[in-house]
Image (cartoon, rainbow, N blue to C red; front, side):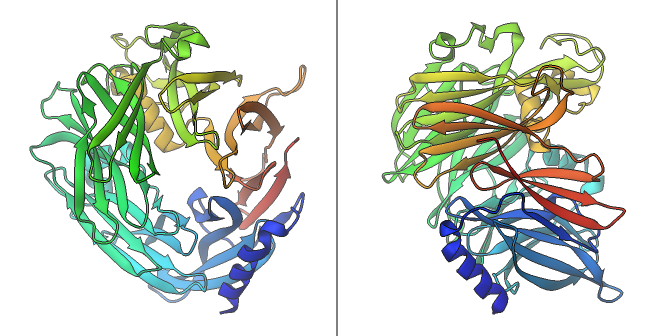
Length: 513
């Protein structure tokens, strides 16, 4: 109980504590760590601490000892728990829903994905295993789906975890849910009418009553790129389908990117297309849809980029000047009852020489995305753009895509790049009332004239309509890998792993303002 008691006390008093600047924490005898082994403890979207989960020692021939460490937001120890598990475990993802920890494991020997939930004492309280009927490393269709679907756990704040898995020859997917508080677990197979060439689920939002999933389907046919988009509502208690509603309204084809529960309704924000080929054509603008709790459309607004963004930034044929597109990363409803959107400029390019590649080019070769500035936009509830600001950052690029992806639209490649973590946007931090919102990103540039280029951590800060920017250099050349993670206001946590020394460090860095 000491493990849990320390965490409960810390969560209760942390809001009144001053922040310890330049705090450092180190763990020794750490084996086989990746970025998935470190996570954030949040309560009501406020950072309250961090957890690490990693291989520590052998238990016997078949099992290993893993360590679960907790620290508070000042990197003070909260406790350590040893957990024994099979040596074939591969940690795919992890998370904390405000009450319990969840780890998504894959056991290659058993061909099983499993969501395992531990309480704040480190005791397992729920699990949801799913045996798959293929071997991921040898199934080409699964590999394609894996590239298009995020492996990360989806967190329902204070109400459990959601995961999507493909496990059916008819392209159906399975929604898995687990809640450590209620001990509730379920699995539901989504099988649409007709058959699709590709079907992709995306988590939109959830609460104690409903789980919202955006479903994208590509119609059958070798050269067919027509898509269908729906919002699927599932019961959080049983997984039963409550409703599924199309986001095709007249000649508007909406790809949902976010959803908000508001006044008993569901507000869906998305990109609007004038073509059914939403994966191979640029969006026309933004869409704002309101559905009631039964899925009936109450209100819709559609705004083109030309009539909104064009007032603030130069546009050419749905794109920014010089052929750039905007990839939307996140949207937040502010205290002023507006929608704040963060996006990143990008365009498709050839790796050799970095030359821009036209959508209809016949060129082949390694394909990548060229990344540039961040863009923040604020919309009112009717979709009118109130302000837009472009935040300069150095030109960068994603990893290289295979040459056969050259015919794919830049937006589709950007979606894949975002899943891989290749974009420069990192995460969003919000205050309790959404009056203060911070978008974080990485910038590889000089902070001062004459200085060397360095990896910088940037923050775009919004306060009741005012936007400011802050940057600070962060780099550890000797670490096997480094990861920047969200922290309290005006801070960022840098996690470094040194494989040779088997050491994991946490460094709390204070920003400029």
